[in-house]
Length: 172
Image 1 (cartoon, rainbow, N blue to C red):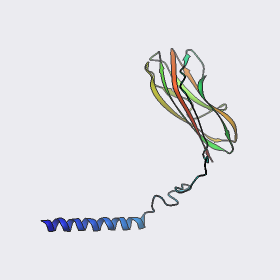
Image 2: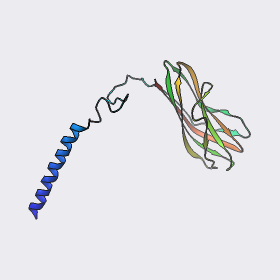
Image 3: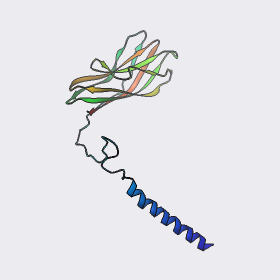
Image 4: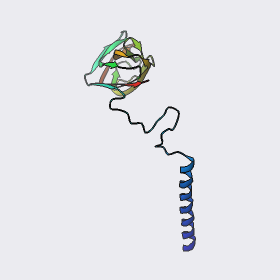
C-alpha cells in the first residue's frame, strides 16, 4: 500500500513539473512586455502621468421639486488638461428623497458638454442609501474645464450628503 502511495506521489510530482516546464515555453509570462495590442504591463509611468482631480464634501444639500437641472453644492472640480484626454468621472454620495415615486437623476458636465451617459436615475428611497455613478467623455481637448455634477428631482424633496467626485484624465 505504501509503495502505491509513493509511486502515485512521484508520478504527480513529475507531471506537475512537466506541465510547469512546458507551459512556460508555450505561454508568455504575465509580466511580459506585451499581452495585447497597445497593452504594456511593465511600462513605468512618470509621476502624475495620469492626472487625478478629487473633492469631498460632507455638507448635506437638498433640492425641492419642481425644478430644472441644478448644480450640486460641493460637487465640482476645476481642472487643466495639457493634452487631449479621455475623462473618467466617478461620483458617489449618500442620498434619499421624501417621495417614493420621485425621479432623482444625476448628470455630469465638462464645461458645457454632457458626459456619457447623459443622466443616471437613482433609486427612490426615504432612507439614506449610498450610490456610485460613473461617467466618461472622450477626446477632451487641452484647456481649462469645470467638471460638475447636476441633479434633478421630479417631486418631493431630496437630500444628498458625503459627496465624492473624482476625475481621471487619461491622455490619448
